[in-house]
Amino acid sequence: MSRIQLLNPRLANQIAAGEVVERPSSVIKELLENSLDAGATRVEVDVEDGGVKLMRVRDNGGGIDKSDLPLALSRHATSKIRELDDLEAVATLGFRGEALASISSVARLTLTSNTSDESAGWQVTAEGRDMQAELAPAAHPKGTTVEVRDLFFNTPARRKFLRTEKTEYNHLDDVIKRQALSRFDVAFTLRNNNRAVYSWREASTQIERERRVAQVCGPAFMEQALHIDIERSGLRLWGWVAQPSFNRSQADLQHFYVNGRAIRDKLVGHAVRQAYQDVLYHGRHPAFVLYLEVDPSTVDVNVHPTKHEVRFRDNRRVHDFIFSSLHHALAQVRPGDRLESETDAPEPALSGAAAGEFRQAPMGLAAASHPAGGYQPPGAPAPGAVAEQMRQYGSLHQPFNGGAGYQGQYGGPAVSSAPTPMPESEDGEVPPLGYAIAQLKGIYILAENAQGLIIVDMHAAHERITYERMKSAFAQGGLQTQPLLVPESIAVSQREADCAEEHADTFTQLGFELQRAGPETLLVRQVPALLNRAPVAQLVRDVLSDLIEYGSSERIQQRINELLSTMACHGSVRANRRLTIPEMNALLRDMEATERSGQCNHGRPTWALQSLDELDKLFMRGQ
Image (tube, rainbow, N blue to C red):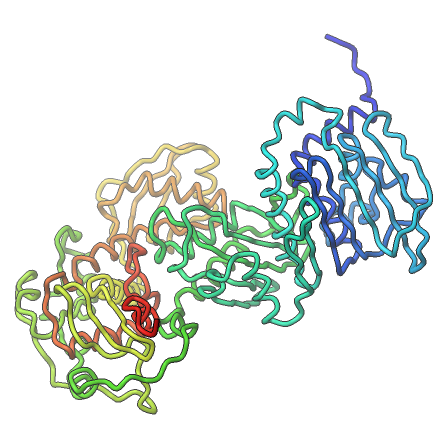
């Protein structure tokens, strides 16, 4: 084996550059972070040939003193931390002191800066070969300009891995947009090949911030976005989340910031997916721009070379806070919220069949009751403790009045209560989903509201209503458990067994009773009654995996919800079922009062709006 020897500075910097400088966008990211850390309120970026030929970043920050300029290009030289205590509570985007040294080792770098309001400044240059910095006077306003030319000119092997100019520019453009979303108080300008691409002014008001978000993420995102701002126990989450109806085929519109730093973290991604699990169609991805503010001492940003990942001191608390905040925000979405963005239209004159008949008719959904014995759909769990629990849901699976075919499906006629007059809406306003006017092919409900025509998938809508009521009843009734006649033995790793002992109370709350029978063996003695037929061993392993990775798990609740969802699907009104106008109006009112009523249990939309303007365009009216 060869003798051990120290690497020369040039080679050491080029090795470090392999982690810091992957492509032109990596350079732009590091330079923008330096500008923001310097207190800049205006940043200008110029690029040529996708950044390979030229990248220039100019800011109006505090600048760099003349004596510090040569040192700025040295490895591990930084003005942002001094000692170990500073590293434990990093409040700046950069702190390692590697960026400029790494960039100058693989490109021709010129750094010009001025710390005063006078025109005289100083310039330092370096060209990756000998790494010797040359200092000279140069005219420059207060601030700093970093010019990077001929990226990877001295490392041809690295240059061969770069993509086309368009691809590299797109990556670079994404980086600038992410930084623009992180700092609304900073103005950003981008020019590509001497052509102005965009210029964003400082955004100090809420309207200006939303305008910038719309410019970066697209106006369609803002039209469907909910603004949230939640603070609890030293954590604050604010920003915009898109309603489930606005989703993507890939996770390309997801921006998350921790104390202003853009990150892509597994824990955060898991919490967001959990919040959307009940309302997003499978294979689709949510869109959001979210900002998490925490005490810097509770988060470690020095865990990844590119600083894209962080580690929280209390993973579980952060995960649960993000999940509960988003889950609550999405649950509060009602049809009226989605219609607020529509253009106000004159209130239509409703016919007696729609308005008058609705206001005098009994509530078909709320008035009907189910015969004693409860709801028992096909494939439901066996009688016993589970059946007793299901009887609590019987009153919630209330079929529509007058549906002999629907009642016959489950045996037993419907029993109607006394008619209850429907109250008129306040001030005579039309409800968000309007009043029913007809039923189409036994599948869709057609209703008229202030904006135009509402089309409702009656099975999907009733499925969501039934599902939410079952979940509510289940939460109020508590979790019924069932002891196993023969305990089930599960082989696990020692780490998983230790985790099971540590989180024994968590499993008890979820309805499981686990006992450690050996270093790598667990015994399951009790399970939730609703999951008596579920693959218990796999479920326990999955929960342990989540507890180890995220500090919490929603898998058991997911399995219970999946079962309740299936039961709600079987218990909902079917296609080709003819409803009366009062029954259709009752369904519309229930949708307006039900959480997440915009999507069925499987994430498909339950209703859609055809505005009067859209209908006019369809028939070329006014053209």
